[in-house]
Length: 151
Length: 147
Image 1 (tube, rainbow over the protein chains, first blue to last red):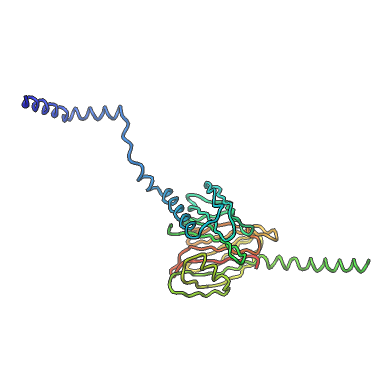
Image 2: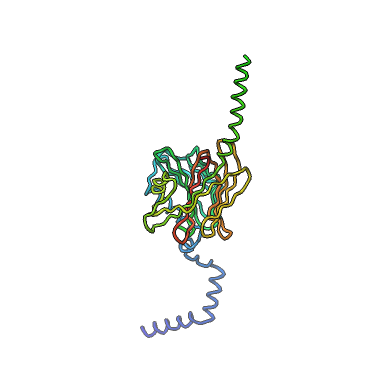
């Protein structure tokens, strides 16, 4: 009985491995089934835009964590053509990042300042950040910073 | 009555004479070029008022003032200032309402814009631009308007 079973299995194997059968199988699969999608997570990480965004978020997180932000905190970080922040009480820092020019450009950044409004900020070499600090002597300083090597 | 009129005319004349002088000085932009690094603990700025501010804003251990330039800005005019190691600062006065100016400031090197910004500044106002790398540290500019 086992001998018969082995004989049957080997016959099936030979049939399946037959190049003609393999070729027909591949054609059939190609015609009737879509190619399996490749894993996309790594492709997402390898995108420069995603890396810049990640670096920007990390920078903002570090600044907010280290310096500390009183409420209200930044509520909007808008798209490429307009970015606004409506902040901020005294002794706090408000911040906004932009990516390089070829990715995006922030315009009309309104930090909570009567003294300085950033109407445009961009760079061709790396992400930029704008932040503002109120000092106890009522001096308010706005800082525009570029990270030429990335963050 | 004539005395009062004469007095009023004199005051008016004095006031009108003073106005242009005030406007002329208020468009001056003072640019302080600073190199920040973590080599040593040197701190030499002409204006010591910025010492604490730099320390609170940044985490460098050394701040060295390389130069200080005063630019008298005219409306619509672009002035270029050579910084260090090939960097150039271009300043353009785009609007002047008296109390507020709109200025464009661009730091360039090798044809690339390192920072390109346009600011509305209520005089007097201070802003810092920085980040471009130098062989001995990072470049920081202190820009004062209306002082």
